[in-house]
Amino acid sequence: MIVVNTETVPGFVVVAVKGMVQGNTVRAKHAGRDIAAGFKNLVGGELKGYTELLTESRRQAVERMMAQAQQLGANAIVNVRFTTSAVTAGAAELYAYGTAVVLQEPPA
Image 1 (cartoon, rainbow, N blue to C red):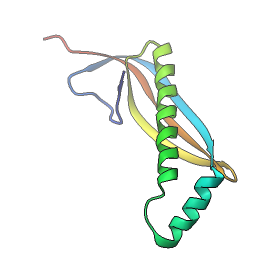
Image 2 (spheres, rainbow, N blue to C red):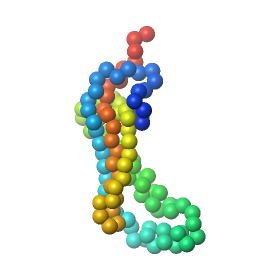
Image 3 (cartoon, one colour):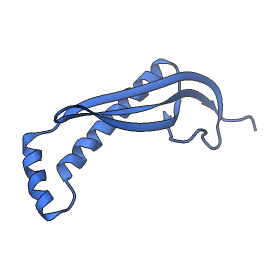
Image 4 (cartoon, helix red, strand yellow):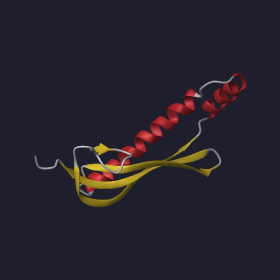
């Protein structure tokens, strides 16, 4: 499955649009990570616990989006975007969405 944030994929032609697909996950903060982040805020630097949390959330949202595209018979997703939102105190949603398409190489 090709997943890009552009409208087109070089070397391919869109032959069918299957529709919008999305994947999301809602994650809550971990008390241990919050304590570590609080200390890190005092001295500065990367909050590695939160970086790992967001990386895992993004991976899961993309996997869910790709599964939906496969169910529609697509072999690519174009115009992929990510967004986040607070769901409740201490929990946030990561949402990935794009357009599921069927790509083919143009005739030679």
